[in-house]
Image (cartoon, rainbow, N blue to C red; front, side, top):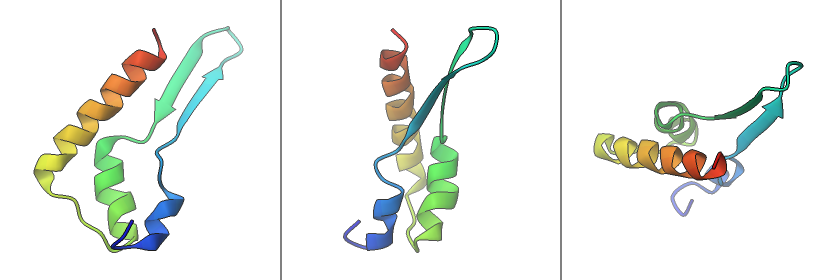
Length: 68
C-alpha cells in the first residue's frame, strides 16, 4: 500500500459466509489469480508470479481454519 494508497480499499481480503435455503453453508473469497491479476493491476501494481502461489496457499490455509 506504500506504492499505491488506493490498494487499501482492497485490503484486507474479505470472505463471505452464507447459508442457503437448504441449510448448506458456503465460504467464498477472491482467488489468488483474481487478486494478483485484477486487483493489483487496478491500482497500478504487479505481483511476481512466484508470489501468487504463496497467496493461494495463504488463502487455502485461512479458509481451512475457518471451516474447522
